[in-house]
Structures are given as C-alpha cells and as structure tokens.
Image: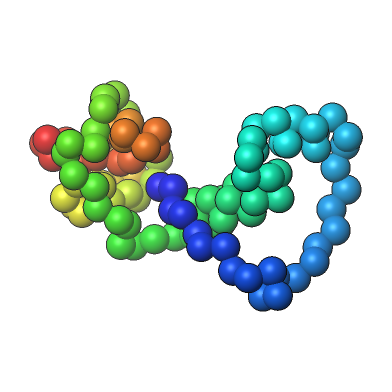
Length: 111
C-alpha cells in the first residue's frame, strides 16, 4: 500500500550518487512533473522497501475503498485488508483494487 513519507530537511539527508542513462533521467523528470525526479525516486524506493518488508499487521482498509475485485489464489500467507483474517498459501482469495490504485488481499467472504 502506498504511504506518503514526510520529506526530511535536506540537512537530514545524505548525498548519494547513482549513474543513470540520460534517457532514463529525462523520462523520470517527465513523470515527476512539478515534484522533481529526486523526490519521485525517493518515493519509489520507499514504496519498494515497504512492499518487501514482511508485515504481520497490515493496514486495514474499508469496503468503500474497493473499486473492483478478481479471484485469485494466494501464493504465500497473506492477511485480509478488510478483516485482518489470515489467508494461507494456496487458499482461494480475492485481490481488491483500491481507490488509490493498490491491489490488496481479501479473504473469501470478507465483503
């Protein structure tokens, strides 16, 4: 799920050098719009970290936040984003598309 991170003061950040192809840098600038591509990259990296960390207690969402759902089979243990109910690997489930554009696990019978 997407989480907004407050940008710390630049004095609290460390300078990091990364080599990017010129075309990639230009595309990032286009995508970033007014926020700047460095802020975009920080957001992408934070999202990556949050999605890679195991989270036994996921943030809950409300039913009103679900735009659509599709049937699925869990490939790993999950937790229902509506109820918190455990969804075991290889168990039937739904994937719910939220109003934020995130896909979240939903247990059968949760809505």
